[in-house]
Length: 234
View 1 (cartoon, rainbow, N blue to C red):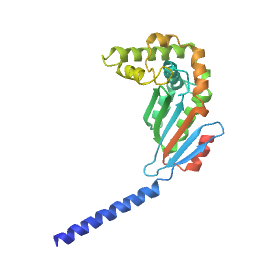
View 2 (cartoon, helix red, strand yellow; view 1 turned 120 degrees about the vertical axis):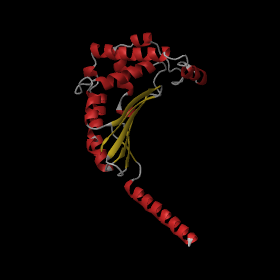
View 3 (cartoon, helix red, strand yellow; view 1 turned 135 degrees about the horizontal axis):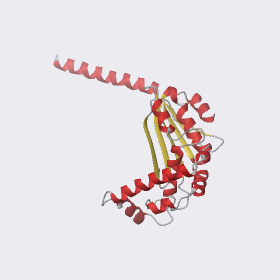
View 4 (tube, helix red, strand yellow; view 1 turned 60 degrees about the horizontal axis):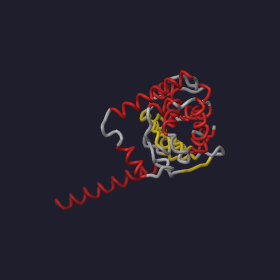
């Protein structure tokens, strides 16, 4: 009797797992990839297990000249700070109001990535904010914005360098691992480097690298791929 009960329980568990896997397979679609006329790559996967959609946009600047990590970071701060139709601070406020989670930005030596998860009925919001940053960045880039974000980056970098005796470990490793012409060679910059970045330098970096031709957009979640693609194209 005990053996029969154990066998029955095992069969029930396997059957339950198979049923759960079938439901997952039905909810999660294949990965689709599209290339838009403006050069942007779009990757979409539908996943209807929760009414959420996660998005990431990655700007590849691996071919940029070495030594522009500070410029890339400052440009990202300014893009998130304000654009022509998004007032100072509204990027985060609008996303928070829509129930966004996981809002993040990362600037690495070869790429800048923005991420966010929103309820699926708010898919258009991050798409609009990111397109705004690509197309209407220069209109809000005045001396006040530049000074504020430069101060933020300068203070952040100074705190990172002075806050720990191990702060330069990554920089030392990168300098030893990669040759001078490689974009990963140097990830370190000083507050003085930040002070030297002016408006023309930011605009030049933005126009060259924060552009659709260097962007990959990933959308995963509770979406219909055809509808999401149409919204991205819009």
